[in-house]
Length: 59
Ligand code: SF4
Image (tube, rainbow, N blue to C red; front, side, top):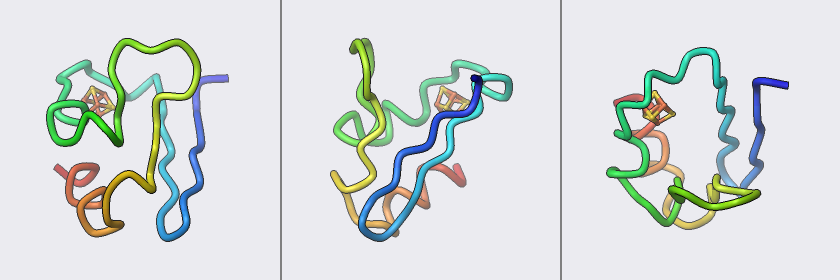
């Protein structure tokens, strides 16, 4: 499966590995939401406000 889904209280993150270009904008934007270099769950949508998570994703 290439799409991972992480549901938070106020926002849901979908990660499509086929579209990832490894720019690291996500982990540099907030490494508590997009945790780099971990085994298992790396998406934590509740670690920041929904507005911040949305802004990082749109960027
Ligand atoms: S921001 Fe993160 S998920 Fe999006 S393309 Fe860059 S490395 Fe991949």
